[in-house]
Length: 349
Image (cartoon, rainbow, N blue to C red; front, side):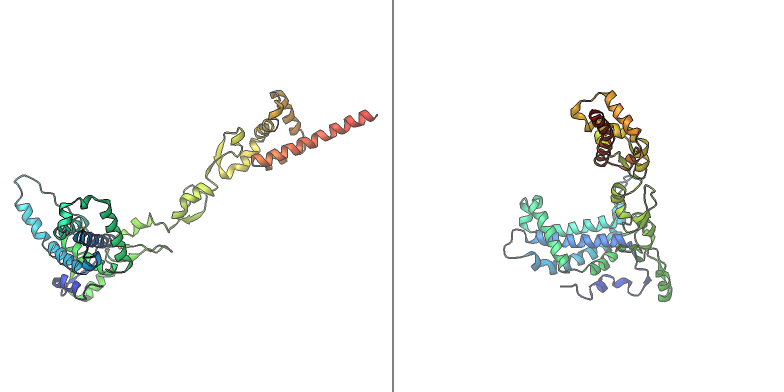
């Protein structure tokens, strides 16, 4: 069930014939629109708490209208109340009045909720129960899903409330013009006009003055790799890229588990394996001949034997423990074969 078509007209009747810019901070408008739905859900839940004869939905329509009327009156009187409150304050005592429209409107909704809370909610521990918060969240979600109070209608009302309480004009344009033509010209370049993010995939909407601010955090903007690998990717994929596939990410040596404690950028893996081949081979030899309990001199002799072979440089192509272990075993077996062949030949002769 939607609001009556004349509701916005009744709220904004005083500005129908004025050529004033209607634009407000888009993100704040959306925030207040969300507060309206939560506020209505809260009021409906508290108004029917402990009453088996009334459901939340049965009171939603009348309470919605009452809440809009109440917020309209309170927001329209806000400037007067602020002036009177300042004048009546204790001499030499500074009166702090919030200039955050969302906070002000939220306070108004709390006032309305208190007025509509039934006796059960006032005298019981209902307000502190976890069940209450769950019911509020669930009912607000149901209204959102059922499009009971469409977001565009709530945003239209929220913009009016914001203009009413934004005394310092920090969150709305407020420019006025003597003709509709001049107003139209202004609205095409108004810094408060609603625009959409230009990055493909991003559905964010915000006021024009927030474009640069959004651009530096937009998850869908294509940016260069933070680790300067040369790749361009979506900002939202940056962390995963830098940790998993970036060639400039820091990695431990693949032979770390058997002794090499070096760390370097991924792109230097081949260089490291070439420069530290001798060390890696020694680590592998220690692992391969662990059960034989070879001495350091014996292990060094085996490494020297491998170094003297024509296949030594080929070992640097093995860039992990498993492949280098296989290559070392294969080369050792190949080098030992001629020795056994000579021994057999000598024994025959």
